[in-house]
Amino acid sequence: MNTTRFDHMALCLEGRHPLEILRWAADCFAPRLTFATGFGVEGCVLIDLIGRHRLPIDLFTLDTGLLFPETYQLWRQLEKRYDITIRGVQPAWTVEEQAQHAGAELWKSNAHRCCELRKLTPLRAALQGFTAWVTAIRRDQTPDRATAAIVEPDRKFGLVKVNLLVAWTSADVWAYVHEHDVPYNPLHERSYPSIGCWPCTTSVAPGEDPRAGRWRGQGKTECGLHTRWATVTMTT
Ligand code: SF4
Image 1 (cartoon, rainbow, N blue to C red):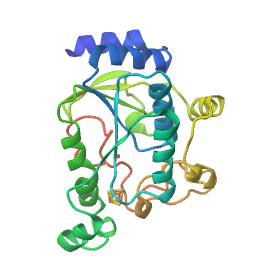
Image 2: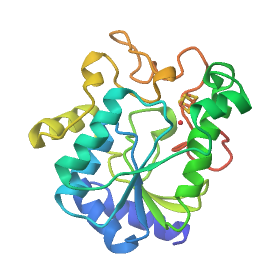
Image 3: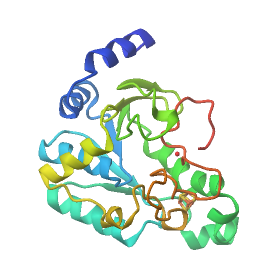
């Protein structure tokens, strides 16, 4: 798809319900279409749409070995609820092996390297063979995401990226979750609006940016999965 076609499709899909966009993506790209979920609340909405409507979209998660117990529990709960499989993609090294080869608690000394080893390298391998992936990013989450189109080239991973929730707000997401009784991480109710690996996630104070609890104090706001444009090296 060339740039003009991307722009045309993005314009055509603007204002459509995420389910319509998902159906369009499945028609165009399945079975080479995947969704890498981190089990955020937006991701749970996508899993609900995929699961309830039996859409032929592959699902996987980057299992860093450092997810919260609540996240592992949610993973199993979603699989059972929708009768689906969400593949776990593991890094080459266990946490113990990483400590041995690259230093103990690498997330404290070099979070970029740790994300590279535990998320980005496994992600690149997991995306081999796919043509497109859907994401759960929203435009109001970060300045980098503010200009995301519904369909755009993902030059970093050489895929088509379908951002079907870009136009939704946090309130839209939660309204959907409550209306459809979608399972979500109970940590969200304990002041964790954005949840990643436990060593790099804290709760946030009232009024703080929802992503302020990710890599707090490390000058890092992204792990690199959905940083836009190929020139950026490591930031999610
Ligand atoms: Fe490592 Fe933290 Fe990145 Fe998880 S979020 S891979 S613990 S640096």
